[in-house]
Length: 442
Image 1: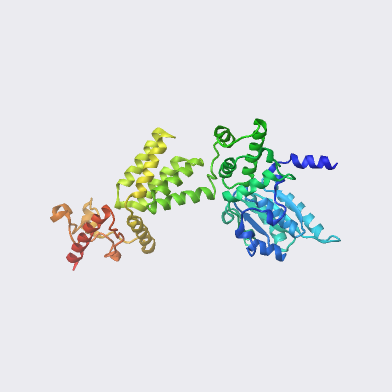
Image 2: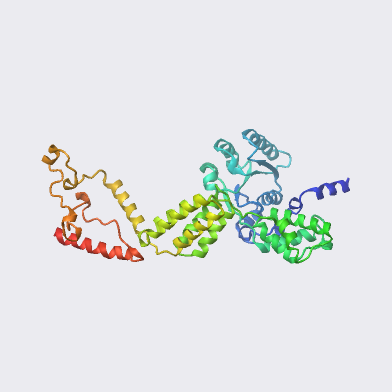
């Protein structure tokens, strides 16, 4: 029986077998688990709040939930929000109430994986049991809880953010799994070259589960081929394949990366801008979406400091539509570089916002009479168009002092040109025009 149990345990995936049994075995997450860190303090004090563990895949959310139940000697129940419904929640709470009222009362940890997939009614069903302490609810999510959990539930939960594992942490995990003869591979006879472990750690992209899957496959390859060594690059590449970096076309990673691209352009860093552009393409982002955002950057952050940025961005978008990927990607890359190095000004963007604010604040101000068209005799008789001066008939094609804003806004200046790029010249011209207007109105 013991041998059968051992065989069954060893048949489990390596990532399951190597799941940490104590806090000290957990790699990474020192910001919440180091001595004195928030979650560690809560565990050691025995005052465990209901919580959300928010982080990318393979960083230990399920492991932490199990350890919390273990450290608090609590009953551990688990649900997947993909499959569970209100009925399953009721069954879990009934088990929790039975455990709490037994001869040796125990608390219950209810772990809900992918809790962001629960709808509002399912989340609401948890509220009374979290509120009265029947459950220590631990939800795991890869999505931003601020957007995916309703306010009533979120207000009762503490959010712990878990980070992707860095390469030293992944390497430590690989070494432990490689040499552990009880739960791991126990494979010193087919120990992998350090270069292989480093490449596996890199390819894992912060995901412990992915790292252990690759390690297990690598050891199987090593045993089957009588051992591998440095220089077996083709074999290593076949093992790793073309792993995509962490990306989610709908989630935080998507918006974080497009934000990083936009801010790199705004900060005039073409190297960073190209990096985030490449990251998004690598993760499967729609190049057409990126093209649209680059056009937005050209009008928001460059504006009239370099009007060519808008033209180049639109042409790159058109080139991509004609060529597709991968040829068209280069056109977008060129546009990304151009908008990053171009002179920057958000003066037009700011001016438009100020004009919209004035419209919202001042309502429907009347159009000055001299600016109105007078296509009929009646309208002429009422004074429509009277006193209008045709600019082309005056010196420098400018009827200085003529009023164009409504009476209540005369003298308002929405547009304040920067001194950068072409807009510096525009600013000089505008300053002269405004000075002439002020002089004529006196």
